[in-house]
Image (cartoon, rainbow, N blue to C red):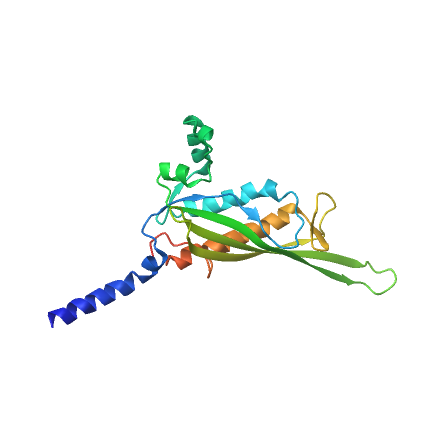
Length: 223
């Protein structure tokens, strides 16, 4: 009888820890966030690099707010560590595992824009002579973002989170525009869609925190 009770307790405990054990993560892992990259197919956005830093900072800001989940190591501090200790002479880089281990980094998060498209709608009316014709052009940008949580010691992908975002503008002003397929929108609108996708990739249904068992914007702990 005692043996059966012990086995039952072990089974219940194992079920309660299954999500964490399956991912191989523990409470408060130490992570570093790597720079965002644009991997969207068939998209010509030459200046994305100017906004990749903003996307990276957006993700860092969202993860930093969840200090109950992660210990976040600043990537710039890793760079300073290299310079202070002259590790650059050995060929090490801030992205290398050796530098991460100096600060106890266990995981890295890589963010990528894997989809970026736009749709254009025209709305117009005014059919009588002398009436004021109304012409409205609306651009809606859709972004898809993927986050990969990589174990530093093995390079193994632990979790893949995905998020979607959209941004709408009306009568896009002539000026600095980017080409998304056959349409032209402002870089700010495209980044706004990416930022919303990052939010979704952290807190959404397929988000990082959701997969780890934490509630949406809830700092009280796991669900």
